[in-house]
Every structure is written in C-alpha cells, then in structure tokens.
Image 1 (spheres, rainbow, N blue to C red):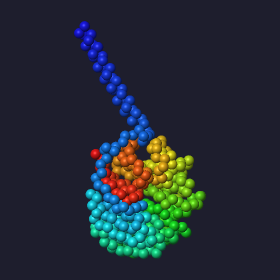
Image 2: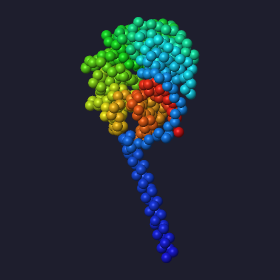
Image 3: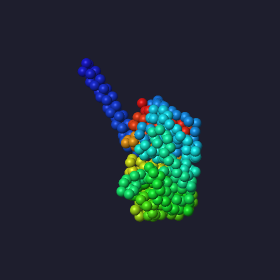
Image 4: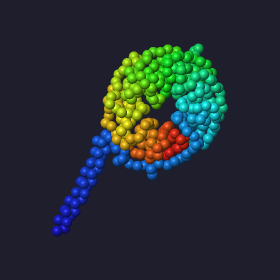
Length: 382
C-alpha cells in the first residue's frame, strides 16, 4: 500500500511538470512565431514610466529640438530659441525676431537657425550671443542642412537651404561667405535638403525632385512626377547612399537610383500618411497607412513585411527614433509606442490628441519628447 501511494504521487508530480513545460513552450512559440502585434493586446507601461522633468513655455513649436554637447536646443514658432541642459535647466534664450518653421542645425559651438522671412542666424551655443545675421532677401522654405566644404585648400563647413523663389544657397557657417547659389526651380523648394556624399537631394513644392552637386550647386539630374500637384511639406527625401526615397503626389513611396535618377521601384495600393523613416539602420523603411496599420518595407526592393495593427485611425504623422534595439514611435495623437525585438509593442504614453513633433532617445532607459504645444518632457523607464 505504501509503494502504491508513492507511485501515485510520483505520477501526479510528473503530470504537473509536463503540463508546465507544455504551457511554457506554447507561450514561447506564440511570441517567436507571431510576426504581427496588435497594440490592443500589448502590455501597458504607465506604471513603468517616470517623468524626470518637464518644461512648459506656453508656446507652439513646429520644429524638432536638437541634442548636442549635453545641451537641448528648442525653437518656437514665434522666433524664440531656448537652450537647456539635460536636467531641464535653462542656460540661455534669444529672440530671432521672426517666424521659425524650419529645422535648425548645430555644429561644435555654433547653433544655426533661420526665419521664414529670410534671415539666417549663427549663435554661440554656449551663451546664446548672436554671432552673425544674414538677410537672404527671400523666404526660407526648407530646413537647414550641413555639408563639408573645401575652400582654398582648407576644410570648412557649409550650410545649405532653399527658398520660395526656387533658389538653393550654400554659405560658409563661420564667415557667412556665399559659396554658391543656384536657381533650380520655378516653384518654392520644400522640406529638408538630404546630403549624401557630394550630392544634395531636394524637392520643390510642385512635384519635382532634384539632385545637385554639393561642391558647385550644378544640377546632376531632375525627376518630374507624372501628377503635377503640390507636395505636402512633410515629403522628406531620404537616401541610403545608393537610393533616394520620397513620396509621389499620389502618396506612393518611390525609390530612385542616386547616380542615374531612374526609378527602381514604387509602392502601389498603399494608402499611407505622408511621412516615413528608415528602420533598423537603413535596411528597412517604416510607414503608417490611414487605417492605422504599421508597414515595414525592404529598402532594397520595396517588399512588404506583414502589416502591424496599431489601431491609429486618426493619425496623420509620426516621429520614429531608434538607438540600437531601443525603438520608439510618437504619433500625432500624442501617444508613444515602444517596439521590442520587432514583435512586442508597449504603449508607453496614452493618446491626448496633442501631436508629437520631436522625439530623441538618450539611452535605453531615457528619452525626451516635445509636443506641438511646446511642452518638453524627459522620461525615465524604470
């Protein structure tokens, strides 16, 4: 009788162990084999997120902030520029006496910004003092971009931007000497000049894409889209060194050979919002369609990886940022989602219908976000 009881207990224990193993394997298989993620089934992380600090200047901002040299530079639509340390303490502020809608740049101890009205500023990034101001005489309609210059045998840095008259300018950032100026379009230039080696790629507001020589401003090629209509200014061209990616007026994503200016591939039947970003370095492109589906495409051939349901039906734009395996997406509804291992989606911040305009990752535990109302918040993941 004693042996019989012992045998029954052993069998019972073995059954429990086997059941636990099967459960664990089933759970692991569901994660590994599940290529898609529904945000409604993902974990929520409100309790894991902690505010480190928050700044509210009660001011609207359309541009991205800059993190450099342990400083945060933030421009506001009314022309105010602020500099903070990474603890959220103000270091200096200045008024550029104009409207700022274009993204600024920073190089070493020089912060450069431009007003829509046509004034280019260089500012000492340590104390906020204005170094130089240059009136262009035309509305500046693109973001600013930095390029390398070689002038009279010495290396310098240049600033490139486009205007409402279809002109593109290049100035030395230290002297504000005009390096070159070219008229490439009858229409306003738009978005951000994309720099790839000795080439600059830029769009105009009427369905044309230009590739120009960064040393001289000479036109290398021009790509005209079939449907001539105004671009959305969020139509940012991106380049991986070989291929240029941009949107057509029909909201199709197109890949163009950088050297030849010829189409490689085009997406079709994708109703996507008008911005995109590189994903996983530059191997993939990340997009969002108007049904709230996240789309990831191969940058090589445009082939689509299965869509990811995010239920973001009213979103019109997003900001994407990655640092190693830490990936964040901020949406125009104010929410932020973290992607882990390309499978697990965690909604870190709920929607509040205040669009996110800038997002930067500091480390795998810290990130900073700014919304269109100008509020800047630093978060820590516990």
